[in-house]
Amino acid sequence: MSSFGNQLKTAMFMGLLTIIVILAGGALGGKSGLIFALVIALVMNGISYWYSDKIVIKMTGSKPLTRQDNPKLYEIVESLAYKAGIPTPKIYLTPSAQPNAFATGRNPAHGVIAVTHGLLQLLTTEELKGVIAHELAHIKNRDILVGTVAAVMAGIITTLANLAQWALMFGGLGGDDDGEGSVLAALPLIILGPIAALLIQMAISRSREYLADSTGAAICGSSDGLAQALLKLEQGARLRPMQVNPATSHMFIVNPLSGQRLINLFSTHPPIAERIKRLRDFR
Image (cartoon, rainbow, N blue to C red; front, side, top):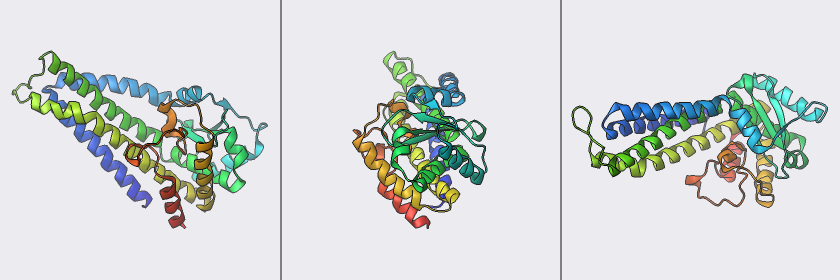
Protein backbone atom coordinates (compact mmCIF):
# COMPACT_ATOMS: atom_id res chain seq x y z
CA MET A 1 0.00 0.00 0.00
CA SER A 2 1.25 3.52 -0.81
CA SER A 3 2.07 6.17 1.79
CA PHE A 4 -1.12 7.99 0.76
CA GLY A 5 -3.08 4.79 1.28
CA ASN A 6 -1.68 4.34 4.78
CA GLN A 7 -2.43 7.98 5.62
CA LEU A 8 -5.99 7.56 4.30
CA LYS A 9 -6.48 4.40 6.34
CA THR A 10 -5.28 6.21 9.48
CA ALA A 11 -7.72 9.06 8.80
CA MET A 12 -10.56 6.58 8.39
CA PHE A 13 -9.73 4.85 11.66
CA MET A 14 -9.52 8.21 13.44
CA GLY A 15 -12.93 9.04 11.99
CA LEU A 16 -14.35 5.80 13.36
CA LEU A 17 -13.01 6.64 16.82
CA THR A 18 -14.64 10.07 16.60
CA ILE A 19 -17.98 8.51 15.64
CA ILE A 20 -17.80 6.12 18.59
CA VAL A 21 -17.10 9.04 20.94
CA ILE A 22 -20.16 10.90 19.62
CA LEU A 23 -22.37 7.82 19.92
CA ALA A 24 -21.04 7.19 23.41
CA GLY A 25 -21.99 10.70 24.49
CA GLY A 26 -25.48 10.24 23.12
CA ALA A 27 -25.87 6.88 24.87
CA LEU A 28 -25.10 8.47 28.20
CA GLY A 29 -28.02 10.85 27.59
CA GLY A 30 -26.34 14.12 28.39
CA LYS A 31 -23.35 16.39 27.97
CA SER A 32 -21.96 16.38 31.51
CA GLY A 33 -20.56 12.84 31.39
CA LEU A 34 -19.03 13.45 27.98
CA ILE A 35 -17.36 16.67 29.10
CA PHE A 36 -16.02 15.04 32.27
CA ALA A 37 -14.58 12.07 30.37
CA LEU A 38 -13.10 14.39 27.76
CA VAL A 39 -11.31 16.50 30.36
CA ILE A 40 -9.88 13.48 32.22
CA ALA A 41 -8.71 11.78 29.03
CA LEU A 42 -7.15 14.98 27.68
CA VAL A 43 -5.25 15.61 30.90
CA MET A 44 -3.91 12.05 31.18
CA ASN A 45 -2.94 11.73 27.54
CA GLY A 46 -1.67 15.31 27.38
CA ILE A 47 0.84 14.46 30.10
CA SER A 48 1.82 11.31 28.19
CA TYR A 49 2.29 13.31 24.98
CA TRP A 50 4.36 16.17 26.39
CA TYR A 51 6.53 13.89 28.51
CA SER A 52 6.42 10.72 26.40
CA ASP A 53 10.16 10.76 25.71
CA LYS A 54 11.11 11.05 29.38
CA ILE A 55 8.52 8.45 30.45
CA VAL A 56 9.56 5.85 27.87
CA ILE A 57 13.28 6.42 28.37
CA LYS A 58 12.86 5.86 32.11
CA MET A 59 10.62 2.81 31.68
CA THR A 60 13.13 1.14 29.33
CA GLY A 61 16.20 2.08 31.36
CA SER A 62 17.80 3.73 28.32
CA LYS A 63 20.87 5.94 28.81
CA PRO A 64 22.24 8.81 26.67
CA LEU A 65 24.79 7.72 24.09
CA THR A 66 27.58 10.18 23.26
CA ARG A 67 29.44 10.58 19.98
CA GLN A 68 32.58 9.27 21.68
CA ASP A 69 30.70 6.11 22.70
CA ASN A 70 29.73 5.23 19.11
CA PRO A 71 30.88 7.68 16.38
CA LYS A 72 29.70 5.34 13.61
CA LEU A 73 26.12 5.33 14.89
CA TYR A 74 26.15 9.11 15.25
CA GLU A 75 27.35 9.48 11.68
CA ILE A 76 24.56 7.22 10.41
CA VAL A 77 21.84 9.04 12.38
CA GLU A 78 23.06 12.49 11.33
CA SER A 79 23.33 11.54 7.66
CA LEU A 80 19.87 9.93 7.50
CA ALA A 81 18.24 12.72 9.53
CA TYR A 82 19.62 15.19 7.00
CA LYS A 83 18.14 13.14 4.13
CA ALA A 84 14.82 12.97 6.01
CA GLY A 85 14.83 16.75 6.44
CA ILE A 86 14.51 16.69 10.23
CA PRO A 87 16.82 17.69 13.12
CA THR A 88 19.18 15.01 14.40
CA PRO A 89 17.38 13.30 17.29
CA LYS A 90 18.93 12.49 20.64
CA ILE A 91 20.43 9.00 20.74
CA TYR A 92 19.99 6.57 23.64
CA LEU A 93 21.24 3.06 24.38
CA THR A 94 18.84 0.50 25.88
CA PRO A 95 20.57 -2.14 28.04
CA SER A 96 19.18 -5.29 26.44
CA ALA A 97 20.67 -8.19 24.50
CA GLN A 98 17.55 -8.30 22.33
CA PRO A 99 18.09 -6.53 18.99
CA ASN A 100 15.47 -3.79 18.87
CA ALA A 101 14.94 -0.03 18.61
CA PHE A 102 12.27 2.61 19.17
CA ALA A 103 11.62 6.30 18.59
CA THR A 104 9.75 8.82 20.68
CA GLY A 105 9.37 12.57 21.07
CA ARG A 106 6.35 14.78 20.48
CA ASN A 107 7.72 16.34 17.27
CA PRO A 108 10.87 16.30 15.09
CA ALA A 109 12.48 19.02 17.22
CA HIS A 110 12.23 16.76 20.28
CA GLY A 111 12.96 13.44 18.58
CA VAL A 112 14.63 10.54 20.39
CA ILE A 113 15.98 7.28 18.98
CA ALA A 114 16.99 4.41 21.25
CA VAL A 115 18.80 1.26 20.16
CA THR A 116 19.67 -1.83 22.18
CA HIS A 117 23.09 -3.41 22.75
CA GLY A 118 21.83 -6.43 20.82
CA LEU A 119 20.93 -4.36 17.78
CA LEU A 120 24.39 -2.80 17.50
CA GLN A 121 26.06 -6.21 17.82
CA LEU A 122 23.85 -8.08 15.35
CA LEU A 123 23.24 -5.86 12.34
CA THR A 124 25.46 -4.93 9.43
CA THR A 125 25.92 -1.26 8.53
CA GLU A 126 23.25 -1.37 5.80
CA GLU A 127 20.79 -3.14 8.09
CA LEU A 128 21.44 -0.63 10.85
CA LYS A 129 20.79 2.20 8.41
CA GLY A 130 17.47 0.60 7.51
CA VAL A 131 16.38 0.42 11.15
CA ILE A 132 17.50 3.98 11.91
CA ALA A 133 15.67 5.25 8.82
CA HIS A 134 12.49 3.48 10.01
CA GLU A 135 12.71 5.18 13.40
CA LEU A 136 13.43 8.55 11.79
CA ALA A 137 10.32 8.00 9.67
CA HIS A 138 8.22 7.66 12.84
CA ILE A 139 9.57 11.03 13.98
CA LYS A 140 9.14 12.65 10.54
CA ASN A 141 5.56 11.35 10.23
CA ARG A 142 4.71 12.57 13.77
CA ASP A 143 3.49 9.13 14.76
CA ILE A 144 3.76 9.97 18.46
CA LEU A 145 1.17 12.69 17.90
CA VAL A 146 -1.11 10.36 15.91
CA GLY A 147 -0.82 7.64 18.55
CA THR A 148 -1.53 10.10 21.35
CA VAL A 149 -4.65 11.50 19.68
CA ALA A 150 -5.89 7.94 19.12
CA ALA A 151 -5.17 7.17 22.78
CA VAL A 152 -7.11 10.29 23.83
CA MET A 153 -10.22 9.18 21.97
CA ALA A 154 -9.88 5.56 23.09
CA GLY A 155 -9.54 6.83 26.66
CA ILE A 156 -12.68 8.92 26.29
CA ILE A 157 -14.64 5.92 25.01
CA THR A 158 -13.46 3.68 27.85
CA THR A 159 -14.21 6.35 30.46
CA LEU A 160 -17.69 6.90 29.05
CA ALA A 161 -18.33 3.16 29.07
CA ASN A 162 -17.31 3.00 32.73
CA LEU A 163 -19.56 5.94 33.56
CA ALA A 164 -22.46 4.26 31.77
CA GLN A 165 -21.84 1.02 33.66
CA TRP A 166 -21.90 2.75 37.04
CA ALA A 167 -24.95 4.76 36.06
CA LEU A 168 -26.82 1.59 35.13
CA MET A 169 -25.83 -0.11 38.38
CA PHE A 170 -27.20 2.75 40.44
CA GLY A 171 -30.15 3.52 38.22
CA GLY A 172 -28.81 6.93 37.30
CA LEU A 173 -28.71 6.53 33.54
CA GLY A 174 -31.35 8.75 32.10
CA GLY A 175 -32.01 10.44 28.82
CA ASP A 176 -30.94 13.88 27.81
CA ASP A 177 -33.25 16.85 27.99
CA ASP A 178 -35.49 15.17 25.43
CA GLY A 179 -35.49 11.86 27.30
CA GLU A 180 -33.87 9.86 24.52
CA GLY A 181 -31.24 8.01 26.57
CA SER A 182 -32.01 4.44 27.55
CA VAL A 183 -30.53 1.26 28.97
CA LEU A 184 -30.66 -0.32 25.52
CA ALA A 185 -28.66 2.56 24.07
CA ALA A 186 -25.99 2.22 26.76
CA LEU A 187 -25.46 -1.55 26.57
CA PRO A 188 -23.60 -1.55 23.22
CA LEU A 189 -21.34 1.21 24.58
CA ILE A 190 -20.54 -0.69 27.77
CA ILE A 191 -19.88 -4.02 26.02
CA LEU A 192 -18.50 -3.12 22.61
CA GLY A 193 -17.20 0.45 22.93
CA PRO A 194 -13.86 -0.25 24.67
CA ILE A 195 -13.21 -3.34 22.50
CA ALA A 196 -13.86 -1.41 19.30
CA ALA A 197 -11.66 1.46 20.48
CA LEU A 198 -8.81 -0.95 21.29
CA LEU A 199 -9.02 -2.69 17.92
CA ILE A 200 -9.08 0.61 16.02
CA GLN A 201 -6.15 1.93 18.05
CA MET A 202 -4.14 -1.19 17.21
CA ALA A 203 -5.09 -0.93 13.55
CA ILE A 204 -3.80 2.66 13.52
CA SER A 205 -0.52 1.47 15.03
CA ARG A 206 -0.12 -1.24 12.37
CA SER A 207 -0.87 1.26 9.60
CA ARG A 208 1.78 3.64 10.95
CA GLU A 209 4.34 0.79 11.02
CA TYR A 210 3.76 0.10 7.33
CA LEU A 211 4.08 3.81 6.62
CA ALA A 212 7.33 4.05 8.61
CA ASP A 213 8.72 1.08 6.67
CA SER A 214 8.02 2.71 3.29
CA THR A 215 9.17 6.16 4.43
CA GLY A 216 12.33 4.66 5.91
CA ALA A 217 13.08 2.84 2.67
CA ALA A 218 12.65 6.11 0.78
CA ILE A 219 15.04 7.88 3.16
CA CYS A 220 17.66 5.17 2.65
CA GLY A 221 17.04 4.91 -1.07
CA SER A 222 16.69 1.14 -0.70
CA SER A 223 14.46 -1.30 1.17
CA ASP A 224 17.02 -4.13 1.32
CA GLY A 225 18.70 -3.14 4.59
CA LEU A 226 15.46 -2.81 6.54
CA ALA A 227 13.99 -6.02 5.07
CA GLN A 228 17.07 -8.02 6.05
CA ALA A 229 17.13 -6.39 9.48
CA LEU A 230 13.49 -7.26 10.19
CA LEU A 231 14.23 -10.95 9.63
CA LYS A 232 17.10 -10.84 12.12
CA LEU A 233 15.12 -8.77 14.64
CA GLU A 234 12.15 -11.13 14.57
CA GLN A 235 14.37 -14.12 15.32
CA GLY A 236 16.33 -12.16 17.92
CA ALA A 237 13.16 -11.13 19.76
CA ARG A 238 12.16 -14.79 20.04
CA LEU A 239 15.55 -15.98 21.26
CA ARG A 240 16.27 -13.10 23.66
CA PRO A 241 13.16 -11.92 25.54
CA MET A 242 13.26 -8.36 26.81
CA GLN A 243 11.94 -7.29 30.19
CA VAL A 244 9.82 -4.36 29.10
CA ASN A 245 6.57 -2.81 30.26
CA PRO A 246 3.81 -3.98 27.87
CA ALA A 247 2.62 -0.35 27.67
CA THR A 248 5.77 0.49 25.68
CA SER A 249 5.89 -2.60 23.45
CA HIS A 250 4.08 -0.92 20.55
CA MET A 251 6.88 1.64 20.21
CA PHE A 252 9.56 -0.87 19.21
CA ILE A 253 10.31 -1.77 15.61
CA VAL A 254 9.42 -5.40 16.40
CA ASN A 255 7.37 -6.65 19.32
CA PRO A 256 9.85 -7.13 22.20
CA LEU A 257 7.52 -9.51 24.06
CA SER A 258 8.65 -12.72 22.41
CA GLY A 259 6.37 -14.90 24.54
CA GLN A 260 3.32 -13.06 23.30
CA ARG A 261 1.38 -15.10 20.74
CA LEU A 262 -1.55 -12.95 19.73
CA ILE A 263 -3.41 -13.18 16.47
CA ASN A 264 -2.79 -10.31 14.08
CA LEU A 265 -6.10 -8.66 14.97
CA PHE A 266 -4.88 -7.98 18.50
CA SER A 267 -1.29 -7.05 17.63
CA THR A 268 0.11 -3.54 17.37
CA HIS A 269 2.73 -4.84 14.93
CA PRO A 270 2.01 -6.14 11.42
CA PRO A 271 3.35 -9.62 10.55
CA ILE A 272 7.04 -9.44 9.69
CA ALA A 273 6.47 -11.50 6.54
CA GLU A 274 3.93 -8.97 5.26
CA ARG A 275 6.20 -6.04 6.12
CA ILE A 276 9.07 -7.64 4.20
CA LYS A 277 6.81 -8.40 1.22
CA ARG A 278 5.75 -4.75 1.04
CA LEU A 279 9.35 -3.63 1.32
CA ARG A 280 10.33 -5.93 -1.55
CA ASP A 281 7.46 -4.48 -3.59
CA PHE A 282 8.79 -1.00 -2.77
CA ARG A 283 11.73 -1.67 -5.08
